[in-house]
Length: 228
Image (tube, rainbow, N blue to C red; front, side, top):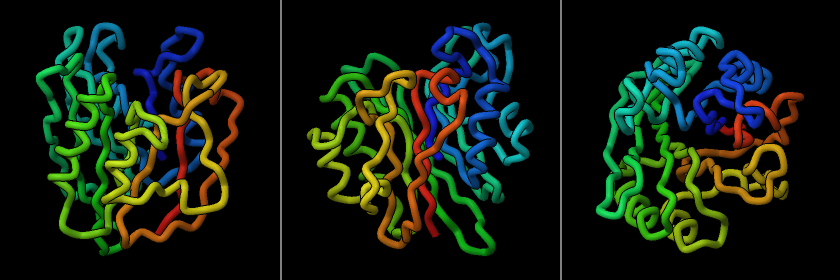
């Protein structure tokens, strides 16, 4: 699953991290890439959101800082049912950057096999996204057992999208099922959240995820991919 959780604030402007956890739990994912996660900020009442979600969902958790914000930090996170072997962050800052951005690279141990998980949240301007995508491509591992997910802030067929699929597959386009639109959550009219995969990843199915709180828990809807 990849999910921009908007630091637990829903379309009703209410911060409810337990609601976020309920949406994630209903999908029963093994791996979750999260965007817009707060770590000890005043607006999130000092809560370490990645750690809290990990405990609520009984998953391993790691937070990846993008910027310092409101007395704490703000960025991306990884939740995993499998042990996290390592985790590091690559800065994606650009000269035209509106807000600090990063991509995390992590390896997890899946029953003795190593899988690389990468998560990112790209910028709001097309030109900075293209620079950020090229930086991500530079740091892609030299193997094909990898998954890259997150909020990319671009739509299919954009220049940004066409650049990244030169190197990775759009996992949710592997099947005949047309991927769900993801933003805004209550009336989605575009797809800006993706799960890209390396050549060694075999897609099993994509899930049209339904949950009574999915249109309220965040301003994004999650994307879910089943693979092996």
